[in-house]
Amino acid sequence: MTREVICTGGAVVDVLVRPLEQLPKAGESATVEQILLQAGGCGVNTAILLARLGLKVGFWGRLGADSLGRFIKGQLEEEKVHPEVFICDPTIPTKAAMVVVNRKGERSLIRASEGGNALSLKDLDRIDLQGVRHLHIGGCYSLRNLLGENLAALLRYAQETGVRTSLDTVWTHDDNWQAVYPALPYVDYFLPSLVEAQQITGLEQPREIAHALLAAGAQTIVIKMGADGAFVQWQGTQGLVPAFAVGKKRSLRVVDSTGAGDAFCAGFITALLSGYKVPTAVEWGNAAGAITITAIGATTALHSRAQLMEWLI
Image (cartoon, rainbow, N blue to C red; front, top):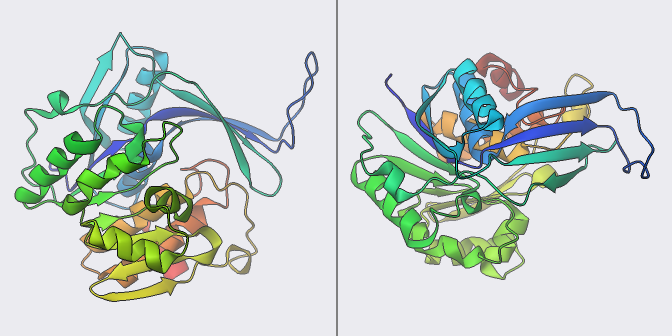
């Protein structure tokens, strides 16, 4: 298989429950409209959506040799994402999470404390990037064995072989926000959310955050700001690209914000690899994110490039 994009990063099995305002009391039960089981995590979500948008995608991961790990691999293969580095490790569990969504589309997460994508540099010592155009790291803090200087080494190798790189973040409870800094000089496109960028830099406003991240080495910064759109620092210019108003499109409504940022990355990368410049790529990302929040789950709503194009007309 000729891969255009390689993804790695967060890989989780999501149990999605909607709508639920609060958990039932001990010994009681609650009835909801939907309970879904999906392969999730920032890296997996973006990989699946990139494939649906017409790109040839590979995924790297080290997950548990268990039913959850086999489920994620099966979902990737079903979506035509090639698990080219997919190690089933009996010493670790595959991570799972429960995503509880209320009627406003707001989500709460209950995560297992153990497991996750345990990929490390030793798993990639024989990788071949021939034919690859783009390497995307989704939810970099999920890769506890591939942070700091190790992540920098991987991204540097990719750039040296002519592969463009993008890096997305995810909330971390490990107080390791600074671990991303060694990698930033080898990041072509840095794509954090606003709250994560604030934690990384210690700054509040998008403009000052973008300047700080640029000074740290990232070449282009796109700060995802949800309903406010995305703030872009690119080629010496700054500006806000507005979000799409979901309620004005076919009378749709916000159902679940899960995976909107991962979908943004998929739309953004697809536009770049289609020859568009960064401002247009951000519009594609905003559209992909808007579509995603109209259904429960990170990969339920967005199905094809044609669907994305309808929002961009």
